[in-house]
Amino acid sequence: MKFSFLALGALPVVLSATTGSSSSSSSSAAAAPAPSSSITTTIPGSGAPTGVTSPPASSPPTVPVTLITTNPTAYPLSSIFAGAPAQPTTTLDTIYPAGASPTAVIGAPSLPDISQLNPANYPPLDKPPPTDSSLVQGWIQQVQNSGIPIPGFAPTQVGGCPTNQAAAANASSSGTCWWTCGHCSRPTDIVTCENKLTWGTSFDDGPSPYTPNLLQFLDEHSLKTTFFIVGSRAISRPQMLQTQYMDGHQLSVHTWSHTALTTQTNEAIIAEFGWTKKVIKDVTGVTPNTFRPPYGDIDDRVRAIARAMDLTPIIWTTSPSGNFTFDTNDFNIPGGTVSASQVLNNFEQIMQTAPQLNTGFIVLEHDLFQQTVDLATGYILPQALAQQPPLTLQPIIECLGKPLSDAYVETNNNSTNPPPSGSAGATGVVTLTSGAPGSIQSPTAQPASSSSGSTSSNQSSGALRLDMSPIVALGFAVFTSVAAAFVAGL
Ligand SMILES: *[C@@H]1O[C@H](CO)[C@@H](O)[C@H](O)[C@H]1NC(C)=O
Ligand SMILES: *[C@@H]1O[C@H](CO)[C@@H](O)[C@H](O)[C@H]1NC(C)=O
Ligand SMILES: *[C@@H]1O[C@H](CO)[C@@H](O)[C@H](O)[C@H]1NC(C)=O
Ligand SMILES: *[C@@H]1O[C@H](CO)[C@@H](O)[C@H](O)[C@H]1NC(C)=O
Ligand SMILES: *[C@@H]1O[C@H](CO)[C@@H](O)[C@H](O)[C@H]1NC(C)=O
Image (cartoon, rainbow, N blue to C red; front, top):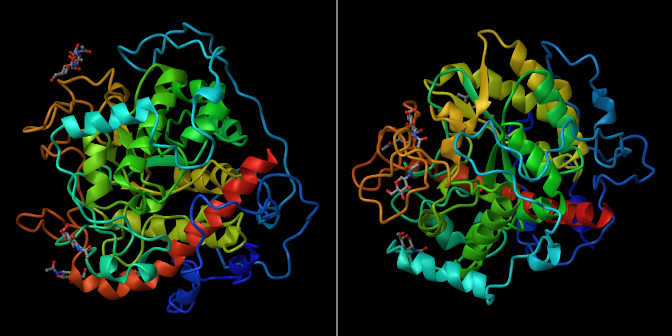
């Protein structure tokens, strides 16, 4: 039943050569399904073999890309498309025993024993967790006790900006600072890295069966990264999560069910954060103090709840003129709306724009799908390593000038990452030199306005935010379908 929106075919990518027509499908955005709706299991790109051996006739267009270099073992671009046949996956390089000492994280407790971990003790996969359990009720109480005021405005409706016109009109820094509609961010959001030509790399939505392929590439090139972990994936693949952590990559929260957080009630948001923090701690012994909102869907209500739960938001960089974000759009290949070459084209624009920033930058990529890992290891990371002037690739916590241990509540060092002044008891958040937890470092953004402190968005971006919205809404729909198929198919 969800093929109706996939049949829209080649929607323009934000950064593709096809510009100016992105608002043409706005009516379709209203059809985006609720995040928790049940979905067909036959969407292409699930990672399961489908018998498809070449791109379907309706596949998205290929666009020219100029490659500096490619990995000699890269899969050809022509083999990276929605419904591509399954490729072999590698196994984990190292499996760490219970009790192992996490040498990469100073002060960390020894590795937990996961042999007794029982998924039945966690919420159902890929659904917003129930809020009536005693654990969630306890987290709700903690948020109340934090003293941090939670704004009273209502959750948004599923569908993004077109289905929320009043909220979209109120999305700027003088309103709710809703990133989805205009890329508003607060000084408490991490959206860049400190130093020019530094890329704080990250991969979202795993751990997945393709994560070990990415880990192998990172190992071979002595790279560390940040992984935004979906709780439902963590309880499904705890051993993989342990290896990611023990190998010295940064783990960050990416919610339990990958829901669009602004559509959720306060209690449901607390459950999404709480369960993801808990499963990561149960598996690794430490609790991340950062999170990325799925789809970048954050507003001041979500920010306040996150703050009360010791979580600093990490989004990704917006271009200096605000006309695009550093999103490769790799996530939409499995849904059939974006081609591999369009993703590389997007990445080229990011590479061309990065030297214009006075800061470093953060890019959206995924380790959830075969296609996205193929592109990362075969093309995107090799391109980045070959850039001139050279780029520094680091986990996001390190690109902020902090040791990896500052990425976790239990190991955060008050001398390298002091609690923000005036904080109401929260100690785990990431605090930058500005004194704010998180930061907006980009001098290319507008100067901070007096009291609201927003720097990345202003009223003049109103036209843009409505143009972007169908793509965001489509992203909601495609992800929901593809993720459900992925879960069912593996
Ligand atoms: C964004 O704006 C810059 C500068 O105006 C321009 O060079 C670039 O092509 C634009 N990119 C997109 C994707 O619109
Ligand atoms: C607009 O934003 C303000 C400030 O956050 C908030 O108080 C108000 O409820 C919002 N109105 C709507 C319609 O979202
Ligand atoms: C915190 O960091 C400082 C500076 O690196 C170091 O001297 C100190 O030993 C650290 N403290 C703890 C408890 O790790
Ligand atoms: C940091 O400070 C908080 C209280 O502000 C304290 O609870 C915590 O133990 C301190 N952490 C370290 C590593 O000293
Ligand atoms: C709003 O943004 C536009 C385009 O980025 C910029 O030219 C303008 O100066 C900004 N206005 C304010 C008040 O920051």
